[in-house]
Length: 68
Image (cartoon, rainbow, N blue to C red; front, top):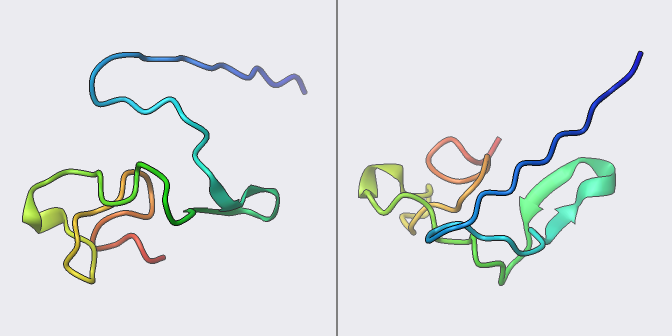
């Protein structure tokens, strides 16, 4: 089976092109490390806040259901 790795880079305001600083990607932990710009940088609408009432993080682990 052949796999194709496709990478699309989108530039512009609001996009972050820095290393995501995942906690431990080699072992499947894709949470963001403290200090990364995507922390508290998600949708500003309060309905999407993290469970601790802070602004949600960008990515799969941000928001009300982001602690899975």
